Structure formats: structure tokens, C-alpha cells
Length: 139
Image (cartoon, rainbow, N blue to C red):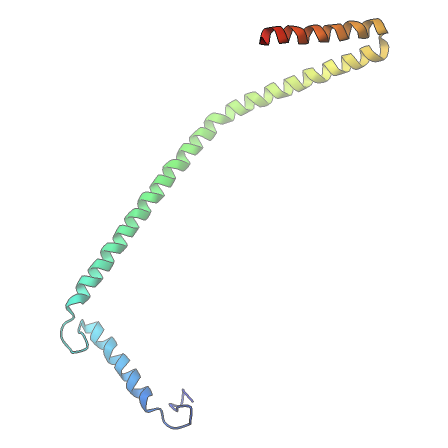
């Protein structure tokens, strides 16, 4: 019905043409910079200028924020590059400590399986002595 210009009752829609005609006239006046009375729209330039200034401020704030984030990312990147050698050194230290611990555990296992109670007693006394020595140093 709306495509045919009819209202709900099937009669010709008398307001349709009028409302679309008013909208078209308003659009034409706006293009020419005129208000509804046909006079020059004195606020049009001012409002568009204010909108443009507001948009420019928003763009400048966005640019400042982007540059601040960029500086932060560059700083993080520098710190990561500085930290890589340190992490490599720590990794090498952990690998060597792990290897040393494995060797000692193998020796202790061999000592326990092959040794007599005399060796186990010496080992236990050594461990107690080490703990007492560490306790004395910590005090």
C-alpha cells in the first residue's frame, strides 16, 4: 500500500506527498544554507565550524594517545632485548645446576646401594654438620 501511495484504509495517502515534499524542501534549503523561512542560516557555518574544531581536538587527542602508546611499546621492546641475555645466562646456570644435582644423586644412589652402614652414617653426619654450619651462618 505504501508503495502505491495508499493509507491503511486503501484511500490515497494525502499526507504522504506533503511530508515527502516538506522533507525535500528542507534538504534543498539546507544545501543552500537557508533556514525554513528562506533566510540565510546564520548558525550553520558556526555549528559546522564548532563540529570541525571538536573533531580536530578529538583527532589530536587520539594522535597523542597513539604516540604515547608507541613510546611505551618501544620501551618494552628495549627492556625485552636487554633481558634476553640475562634469561639465557639464567637458563645456562639452571642447566648446569641440574646436571650437577643429577650427578650427585647418582653418586649417592651408588653409595647407598654399594656402601656399608659405615658410609651411610658418615653421609648422615656430614649432612647434619652442613645444616648446623648453615644455621650458625644465618644467625
